[in-house]
Length: 117
Image (cartoon, rainbow, N blue to C red; front, side, top):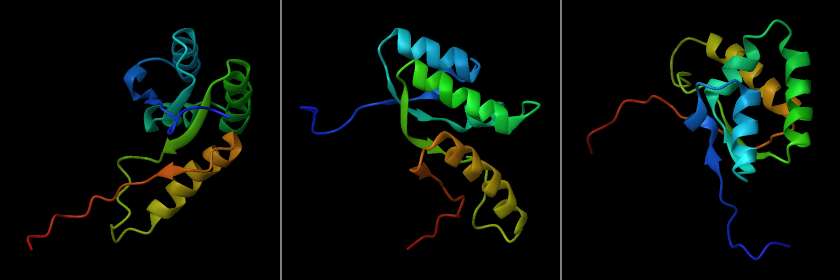
């Protein structure tokens, strides 16, 4: 058991210009092993030819490097309070990515307008 009160980590957004694998290698080389998977890297995985296979390979890659993701970030541009119900289909694809990676804590943000009180 760790002597830490909290687990510290960092978002992968800091290396958003790197491929998911390059990002993992870079963080692991600096001994940053607890990360939040940013939406930029999820997009990269989904944009590959066979996302399901790529997600499985990425999971093996992160495991081989000792990197864990206690949480990940769903699509930041997803407007979950929009009247367009197709966002649910998009988010389902993203949820499938995180389930495939076996990451179960996700961050989602709304784009709700601010209300003056």
